[in-house]
Length: 639
Image (cartoon, rainbow, N blue to C red; front, side, top):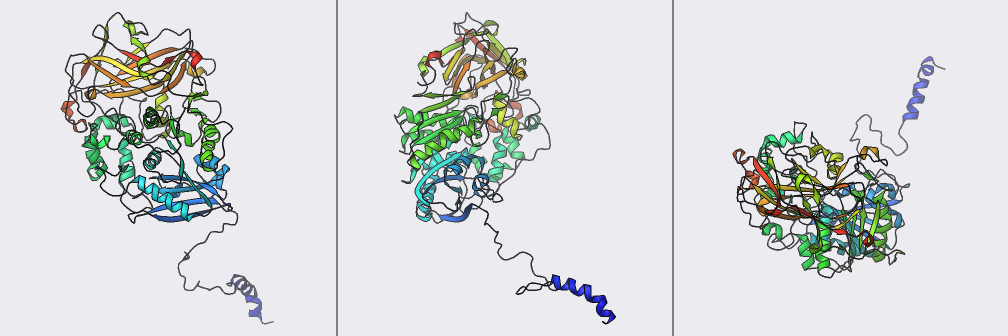
């Protein structure tokens, strides 16, 4: 053999091995794009299929919709969730098993056999059209011929015609904004919508859900506004160089000054909200509890809410109550769990330091939610029919079922009066008053410093934060009972009833109902002396007479401030105490009241913020109290 042939034989063998297979183009000398025109991922190991479709609405706008089902799907109901949070992220396509691919809230439904439908609301992510924050129903605030009621109707109409694997029945579910979308669908439901579950829905943003609480603005929403309305996709929170949000918002001044400094004039939603600080027609025309009660549907609906929901603690229970007042509770049910906002969709073995018996959210989905949907979507009647009202008792660590709710009517509440020497008791006080100085320059924080409102772990649990971190502040008044020798059972919504005079002309009042644990607690030693809030809220004093016509507070004149607190189902145990705290700030969650009456607090000037002396009366000039829904222990659960 020629010597050169011997030398190049190995090279020839290597080239032969690397040669393109028959029919393949060898383009290494003149490379084209390494990205193929269309990549088809092998899916033989997948037990489900996903379809991305654009569903046309009646005005021609098409909405991006993701449909997911098992490969062998046949005659299955559809579970629809409409969202502004990117429908494409609800399924993890890296997971080949449907149960693993869907998000946590849908796993029990995947086990049970459902087709999942996720849709971007118009103007967000993959959907066409213009986005409007919680777009109002058609009417004076929406002059178009579409809203999220018609969009849900048109979507369901398309689904029952175009998804042959379905049984042509649809259930709607969703939490927070997605829960609002469910509520909107109920204003004019498609005949194929057979069941619904609005979870922590945004119902009335001024009264007690996301944007305000009784007129006090929740400044954490400023991050939400930029995240939601600065882009059709996911926007970002407002950049903050400082680590402590308390100091950042204090330095900024008013909420309006903060917004102005960060470019919020570019955001139409902020511009609309900031010129409507009062409960005028702008808010009244989109309060869904009133609209749904005025135009009730026949769709069986389970209203779901967390007892410590830090974002939407108002809407679900208030809508259920509005329907109940119309005699419509036969098709409307209420469930309240020991959860923070939307925790029903994840794991709920605990909330902050509180520990439950098992995963209360997973158990609820498996034992209550899926059977409720199956009843109307699969004609499978549960062996344990849904109770009209199902509410967790955190102190007993168990679910209570009620035939009706609450047992105690508003005129039957038991006053616990503020007393001399900071006592608290049902007995009428002999007289007295207590004062504190509310200084806008030193507001009471809503959680221990430093405050990081973007930290989900602390944000989700601030409503169960141990209140000892503020009890010793001179601008927080704490009243408590003696150590209880019997249990105190509470079922319903407490009402704060304060009689206060202020040296200023405006004021906010925060009232907290607190379970004070014994100083030693063997079951969980770190809970010894814990001050657990079980119900709290804030009230802006200018609205004491009217929510839509605020008035200045007459200085140094006793005024009554009476407002409802969030619902409780709770047993204060023997050996514990009941405490009530009163203060005037909860910062930076809520914007500061300048304590000087101005037309619009959003745009208060630095000189408007002034110290004021708050004097709480518990004598002849006013019997300040918290009115509690006390029931006898024998009346608990079962109605």
